[in-house]
Length: 283
Image 1 (cartoon, helix red, strand yellow):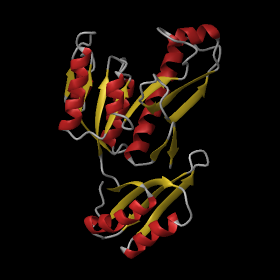
Image 2 (tube, one colour):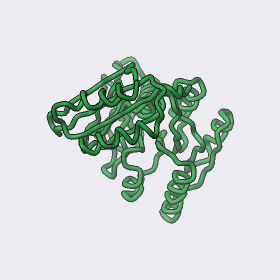
Image 3 (cartoon, helix red, strand yellow):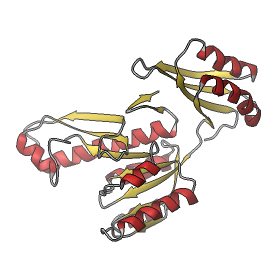
Image 4 (cartoon, helix red, strand yellow):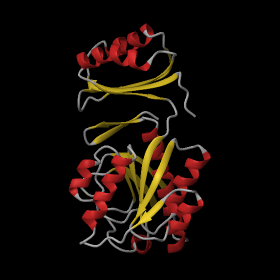
């Protein structure tokens, strides 16, 4: 639930002495009460990162004008938002429904602060699932001839609904470099932990044949380098020789769902800040 008196400020800038003093000083000057503050300095990039929640009745436009001068001096990228505001999210899917179902269930239950105006897919299989949750659904087969038009439709939806996040919920298509660039920093994908060892079809069968002892999943930002974007969340679970392929698949899908949902939550709550090819996560 949005609390119009509870604000959230995230900031990243080149590191230097006095940043915390300047930021908190501006908050105090606006009669703000800090309820949560996290900060981090990256020795690799030399950048400072900060996430602060503020209880206050200050006027947003007045605070933004006052803080803009500080942000300019700090050469900072910053965002001011309400705590709990639902981020507008487009979900892309194919045939497998485990990740989509978890997102929809947790969004409905209030765990995920997102709103989903549309689900787009390249197969019609998950239409009934979307209907059950009352979310609009559209599908279009993707071929080499139709891929470009489908991606244009994605960008149209992003603009029409002012989409802040695009989630690839086991969307089994490779995005074009152009679409990756358009969605940079606001598209999240999920993949199983077997990459790059077991490529192609039936990775769980390949893993079973090799006797793997760990399975898991990685959620990351989408880039044109396939499955190599900045990592947001990872989970892993031990398995053993007694488990057959269907059991491995079930456990793997559980990890994928859990990992993607958590990555979406972190993003939606402004807890993910990019630091080059890495992420800073304020959990």
